[in-house]
Length: 241
Image (tube, rainbow, N blue to C red; front, side, top):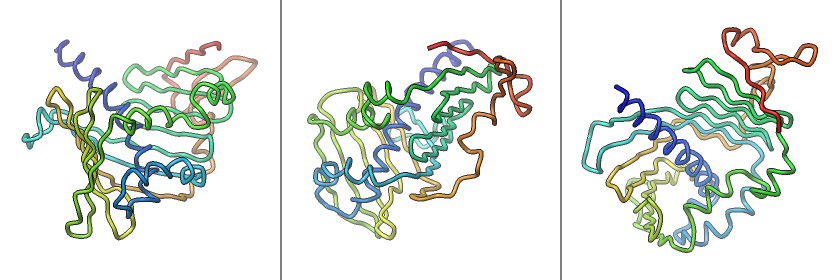
């Protein structure tokens, strides 16, 4: 049982990174998906992304022992919302909120809420103006070899091979009807195969008024943080910057 728990957490960490890389990839391709020259699409990425203030993506992540397996040993769902510099992220039992004041991480298994003050300026100095940039660069770098494989049934296909890093190959399928990513698959050098399928992709969504409000999770009274009514049984840990 302990071995399975450790393995699952290691997988969670791997797939959390994959989710963020994939979101970055979605942002690139939502504007340039029709281009057969993948390098040209990547080259225009930052200019295109600067125009995109809002984004909502829901995806399912399934991991297989190898590319021939039909039964996943891991399956999870991710929901990512972005509005300017505000982010709301839900992956499995973990929720994360980043607004202009706080970074909040909620662990539903541990019934714990970790809160720290957010320093947007320091983030920009370290990561650039967007926290997805580093993840994107880790996938689309000078060691990548993109190939356009053609179009089948209104779906364009790309293959990106990696010379370095844990990922051997990335396969993408892009719908030509609306120029958004339909699926993306990662083949690791250790043989593991991860496929992500998109359920929702909205470029300019309308969010609820409290989507990025910290009061969903926490309240502050007399300088002390406590859990909101929705999370009344959760412990709150405030991390001082």
